[in-house]
Amino acid sequence: MDKTPGPVFLATVRPLLLESQQLTKQLVAALLILSASDYTTVPGSRSTVDTLASAVGSAGLVTTHFTQAIASNPLDGINSPGLPADERAISRARRADAVADIEECLDNALHDLGTAATSCSYAASAIVRDLDRAEASMPLPRLNAKQLAALEALAQGEGVQRIIRGGGVRILAADGAPVHPVTFAFFEKHRLVHVDRGTTISQGQTVAVTNRAHQLLAQPRPTAPTVRPAPAVRPTALAGRTR
Image (cartoon, rainbow, N blue to C red):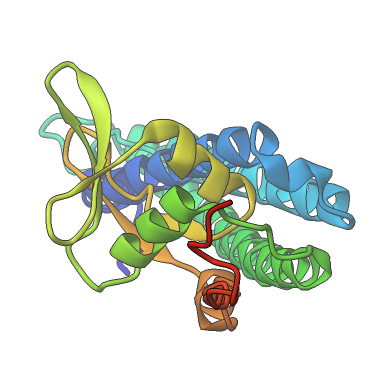
């Protein structure tokens, strides 16, 4: 990266500044989603939320360091025609001082970017760990016949989606069969399905069944009791005798 003060450095650092702002925006959005989710009820979630919040702060500092580098970058021309010699000397001195300031700002930005990345990595690992522990301690729910049939349809493979159709949100199994929203909400509550919210509902969100769902489907199912026919009544010797 060219750290030479002047218009070239400004053009170089500008996209980095914009990317750092976008990173901060994405982290704030992730923090908002996480803080409003059921994850906050899971033991150990508080430290994870705090870690992600610290990542937001670190990302914001990256932006601050880039703006400080821009503020330290002199843009006056030292080769302008007619510029007095003393002005040229002042410009050269300013540029020499700016190099150290710019390098310090960029080093600080790199450091805080690494801190943000580490915090995100810790938070992601903690979320997976906490949810796995929470799921392991949750008993599997009991399903009625309709719920069981719906879960089997969702477990058939790829192609399950949650989309907007006909003015409302619909969940469609791989074969196109709809799943009732109440039933789907029950599956989400008991962590039997996972919705990929990387896309919007209008674009279509992929739905996958979890390991808990596969465990539930693999359980032996109670068989209906066998009803034995009543023994036939033998006619007695008095049958048909009249008085």
